[in-house]
Image 1: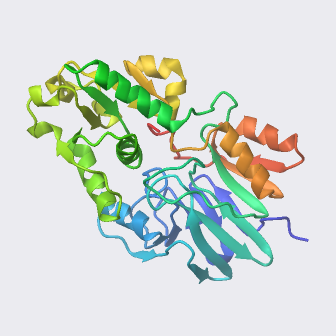
Image 2: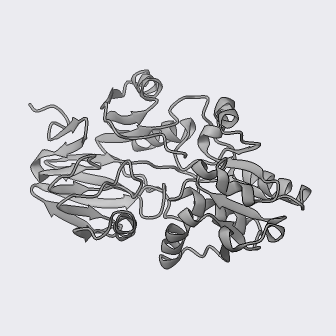
Length: 332
């Protein structure tokens, strides 16, 4: 009798689905690639054919140029070889998807990156019971329990209102995090223009094109220093302490990331206002999801694998790490 999940095989460069002759999130160019979402550590250019959600394909084209893409909307299914495949929401960023595969009576779900808390920029995570759940574990330690999003946004707005002669410069990853910060601010009643670094502009435009109403955004480079007082400015994390930021009026440096839970990371970036805002599941979300799905096995792609595997084993759930390479912590 074949072992459970014997029809998929993890390699350092990705997960190979043998009866479909396709790879999931491969880090090297392949003939057939199934891509969970548009972050660069999961979506690479150069594949001969790419199956992904329409939004993910648009992000890939924005970053890599034209793709030989086959769009798969949420809820649609396709058959590759002997495998039935569908894409369901992962709640990570715009277009992010879990890949659900059915073959010979077994169901395997590859989560990609995901989170369970609400996000106004993307469809919420959809739980799919399965035999094998292949999950991330970016924040797979009990110390990582993210606070409520609204409380972090309120801290940002309070600091802004207390310092009308300064601006708040927020470091946020260009895909997903920046747009989420903007939408969370709008949801808390902040409808003033928000100023953005040029590196964020195209992806913000793409989100707007896909129905995410970001409100008025202005390029920072066209603003005078006086105009930026009392304003929020968004930039990629790498721009927080470079020459570009010198144009700003005494900025309060903030960073929106799950890693701001680690004080040393905040100090390393000279962050005055750490905002714990993550697009990845925290420890409670990871363990709650596994409990809810009740898989026979859990496979962990990347992150803090050991603690999550130990948690599974103490609950009689077989678990293993896949040792995939190329996945990064990002500036989540």
